[in-house]
Each structure stands twice: as C-alpha cells, then as structure tokens.
Image 1 (cartoon, one colour):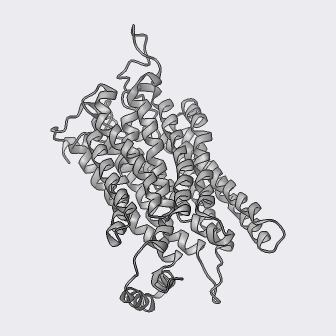
Image 2: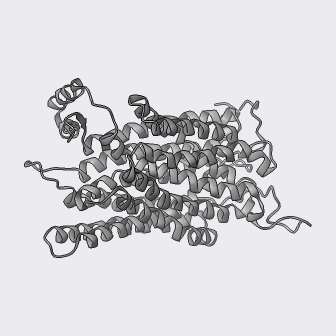
Image 3: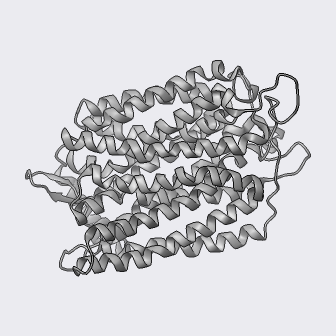
Length: 473
C-alpha cells in the first residue's frame, strides 16, 4: 500500500483510525436505508388516505422537522458528550422511533375499522417518522464532520464522500423493502400495506440497539480539528463567530436548497414514473412475467410491476415504480464512488459547481416533457446529486476548528429545506403535472452551482485544505 493511501486514515500522531471510520460509515448506511423508505412512502398515503401530492408531502415535512428541531440541541450535546456519546444517544432515539411504528400500525387498523379518523392514523405515522429523524439528526450532526478528521486533512472531502457512498447503498435497499411492505397485496388483490408497514421499522429498532452496544465497547477517539481561521484562540483581530465566514453561511443556504431539491425528486419519483413515462412496450411486461415465473423466492418481488392505466396504456404500478427507485439510487451510488475519485484529483468546489450545472440542465429537460429523454434525465439527476450533500458539508466547515461541531449543527438544520419545498413542488404538480414540478429543484440547483464555483471567493482559500486541481494524490 502506498503512503498516500495509508495517510487517508492515519492521524498526525500516527494512529490508524481505519476501523473507526468503517464503524462510523455504518451510520450512513442506516440513515440511507431509513431515507430510502421515506421516499417511497408518499404514494402509499396518497392511495390509502386519498391525499393530494402536496398533502402527502407532510411525510417529508415530519421527517425533516425532526432534523430542524434537534440539530442545534444535537450539536450542543455532541460538544458535551463527545462523538461517542452523541452517536449512542442518536441510536437509542432511532430505536424508540422504530418501536413506535407498532402502536402506529394498530391505530391505522383502528382507522380502517372506523374507530378513529384516518387523519389520526396519518399523524401517528408522522410522529414515528419525526422521532426517527430526531435520532438521525444526532448521527448526521456528528458523523459527517467526524469523517472529515479521521485521517489526513487533504482527504477530508474524499472521506466524507466514501462514507456517504454507504448511505447510497442503504438508499438502494430502502425502496425495495418499502415496496414489499408498503405496497403489499393479499391473494384477492387488496392492499395490506397499512398492516405490514411497521415490520421494517421494527427491524431497524432492533438493529440500531445492537449497533449502540458495539459503539459503547469500541474506541471512538475525540479528535480536535484544525483552527485555520483562529476561532479558538485569542489572536488579535481573529473572528470568533462562524457567521462571519461567508463560506459557512452560504453552505447553510446551499444545503437548504440542495436537500429541498433532493427531497422533492425522491419523494415524487413514483408519481413521475406512474404518470409521466411514455407507454411501456408490452415486451417489458412479458419479459418480467417470464422472470417472475422462474425466480423462485424472488417471484413475489418481480411480479406486479406493470398495469394498464386509466388511459389504456401499459404503465408502471406503484410497486414497480418503487422498485425502479432502487435503480435511481444505484445511479446515486455510482455517482458517490466516482465522485470520491474525482475529489481526490480535482478541487471539491469545482466538482460541486459542475454537478450542480448538470442537474440544472437535467431538471430543465424533465420540465420540457421530452418523453424517454426526460425519463433518462430523472435518473441522471440522481447521479449528479450524489456528491452534493457531503461536499457542501466539507466546504462549509472548512477551517472552523472546534466550532466545526457547532457549524455542523447549523448545516444539518438546513436539511429543513426538505420539509418545505417538496410541498411547493407537489402544489405545482397538482396544478399542472409532475414534469412541470421539476422547475422547483431546477432553481435550487442553480444556487448550488453558484456556491460551488464561488467557494474560493467566499472562503478566501484556493481549494479545500489547499489541494489544487493539479495535485496528484
């Protein structure tokens, strides 16, 4: 192994923290899985409770509200408890949220029996979504900046993108599991999703408790980050407020708008595939039926992807579109891994600016309703979104020293964008159609590209941690 590879996970004092990095990346897998299920839940509630697209976006609102409410407390507790204590606290809260889905499912069954209102059942599920998001807030507030200090500072953006790649793996399997339990049907063809929705969340609750025990008995070092802007000392003329640093302030705004765009595209992906995709060739259905007939235990998963819609053409079912979301997240994962490679060779802000520009183009082409070209652009948007969250994060906390934890809390709080703008995207889609709704994420990506290309001016640094685009490492 070359010295450059060794340095990625070796601290200045010579300690190798590769195992710690691997353990922390398991948290990224966790919240990717949780987010992947959330993103295919909207259509379930649209069908079960007869909600509009804008109304179903309350799922995202509840999810990201948890981030907004707890990001500052999480940042404060992370400073008090350290990385290890904050992670364990977050895992316990996620477990509580997972267990809550059991009574929430019972309330849903009571609603079907007419004992309580459908709105009561919806609120019960939203409470569980919000509680899980509260726990995930602790994990994201701590794990994101922690990955940037677990080794040579030159590779901060590379490490956080590698860790976020496991997030992409979780996002692939989240929709698959969601399709199995949210859109399940009995032998008579009746939906059983309301009865089985709790099952994956029960599994999450048990899994994170096991993970909390592993963290408790593991060595998780508290590492002090470098204070490039002298926020932590008494240097005359030094600025001690993170808000006086434009690169951080603009990162909060960029993260707000990026997550808004991401949440909107992910949330309404099923709606797009079931309503905007051109007529599907009959050969696709016959091929899928043939696969299902010979797939053994996978036959249930492979069946029921297509149906003749109300317009008399072959289209995706909710289940099929939910499973296709996993293909979108494969594009997302490929983007994460390839992005991590690019970030070792090129300046992080330039890669962010380029990817932001590509998504402006992709979402505009979706808006124009160009048939299969627009469908391809939806999937390409997954690829170009892949590096945005971790790269904005790394650029935003650059050089903030001990205050990186506090800055991290505000950047995580900016995730609230995912609660607000999807409702706007849904409202546009309700008034026009789902393709026109993509004008909302397009505007968001314009700002992300602007932040990326202008980061050196905001930070007064050539590139992240001084690595130029010509540096070979």
